[in-house]
Image (tube, rainbow, N blue to C red; front, top):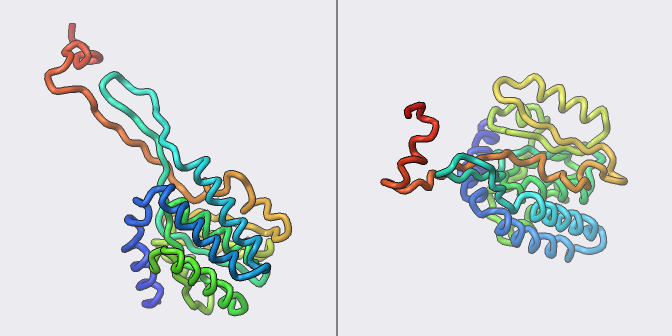
Length: 236
């Protein structure tokens, strides 16, 4: 448990810097990652395509600030940011495509990631995470942890959500574990079809990894139009 706490603390230490890079900066880095993954050969070709797909979705859905209506004298903007640290897991059915799709969506949205997979998938996870660092990603943004069970990871109060791939039985099991958590509710993003990827391959999949924020700026100049300042004051 002490090792897990240390790993999550490392993620949190770099999260703000990673989130502040903006969508364009993260997309550029992850596109380089997709090239590195693709160079591993035919087995990773579809995984690289999935990374690029998530980057394209982020550019279309996240890389824009929406102006909202507001009273005269201020601007109101709606934008998205990452939530914090996501866990990524999977059972024996986890594939290269699913793992890279989950990683790409969580990272491009501005989150850090802790990966915990079954022993048969550790080499695959280590390979794609090594490629991520080669592409220029800070090494504490995405970390794999060795755990006998995912229970401690899913119960950790600083994990904001879980992306997992597996059978319906696996999904139900991790959902029950998340439901037993104390404190903040963690989001569950689950894929159970590793043939068609209807969840990970959805055009809006990346939206599952963000939260919305609003920014209000008062643009009324000091000593400006007193009539505007008085509106709504109730005085005549």
